[in-house]
Structure formats: C-alpha cells, structure tokens
Image (cartoon, rainbow, N blue to C red; front, top):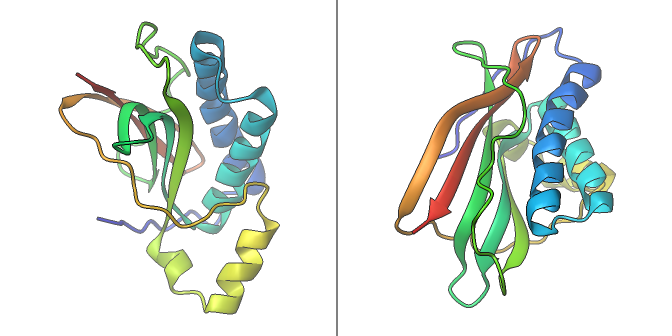
Length: 169
C-alpha cells in the first residue's frame, strides 16, 4: 500500500541530503560487510533519495541481496518516507553482520509516492531523467518467511525515512 506524505514547507534539499547521507552510511556498512553496493553507486543512491524526498516523490526504497531465480530477498533494508508524528533520527548502522549472501545479487527497488503519480507523464519522465539512478520497471522482490526489525529512522526538519531490516530464514 502506497502512502503519501506532506513534506514541510521548510524541508529543504539540505535537509533531504542529511537524511540521504544517513541512508548512505547504512549502505557503506553493507559494502563493508558484504562487498556491495559499490561506493560509487552509494553516492548516486543517496542523491536520488534526497531529490525524491525533497519533492515528496519517494514512497519506499529497498536495498539488499536477493536470489535472482526466485526474486526473493535474503537481506533487505527498506526505507519508507514519512513526516510528522513519531519521527526518529537514529544513528546509522546496527545491521546484521552474518547473513550468507554468497551467490546472491545486490539489488535496489523503489516505489514512488502518490504525489509523483499525480504528475502528468511528461513531468514524471522529466523528473526521472534528472535523477542520478536510472531505474526500469520490474516486479518487486518478495519477502517470504523471515524476521523484520523496525523502529529505526532518519529525519530532519519534519520529514525523513523509517527503516525496516528484513532477514529471510
């Protein structure tokens, strides 16, 4: 289910980049633990998140390792855009350090907010072209039997992301 959020009128690109940088710190820890994502791609992902957050166009973005054959996550970090309410600004990190990802590919999957979907097709295309990451349509990977850990997030000036870490059994 996609949820929309109303970003604060004072939520700036600097605020969005602060949140993106915290996600980037998680991705750097993934790189340190598992060898992916590449450091060059992390910079692109964090800027993509910042630009989407600033304009209210991010719903969720997932990063992790999946089995290509079954399209199922083994380890997934999900970030969901949020505003107001119970915003949390945690320290990055505290990711699982012993997941067997040998033979699995690193993958990222993004969903856009209802605000983005209300744009006309030409505006959507123009915005997507301005992003540092080129994404193509694909089926969302599944999360079968496993465990999720919530309660972690990154926020500034009234907007941010909540993080969920899923590990398959």
